[in-house]
Length: 183
Image 1 (tube, rainbow, N blue to C red):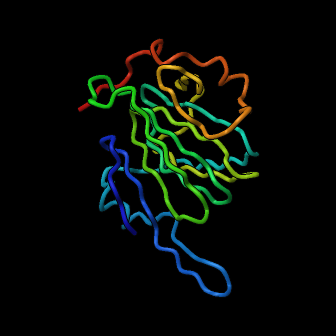
Image 2 (image 1 turned 120 degrees about the vertical axis):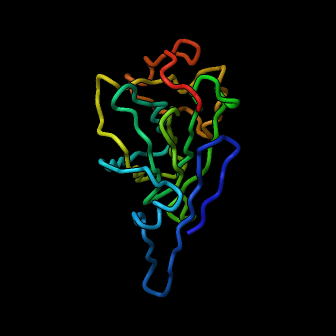
């Protein structure tokens, strides 16, 4: 397993070891003892899996208060553009986003700690997306930034996006509360 830093502090790309032969492939999607080497304080309490078709955009979501979440994201089938936006007030990269293509084939994951809004778009015909969370989902603590915010200027790499009604009603980046500060 290999980890690499991104241009935004605290976001990590993880590439797991994949073992392939004529039967197919095998990899560990998570191993507490290995991950604790670079995420020593992290405890996952919920796994989420979503299946979506091409052109779907989900996000940009985050949770606040006692339900802030860190997420370990990966793709089990297909290709996804995964996006994290730094919403930590005082961060040198506040308002910047980082995107990466995750796929079942490339064996990469991204660690998104609390203090980031998160979303993804489906680049393949369909995709199965999985993310481990450090806190349970709480509807009352969920917040969102609209995917098409001009200030963030994210290229989701899809035409004619399919977005939920809830996500279409999300706030603009300059309207969100300052729920996170940079350490």
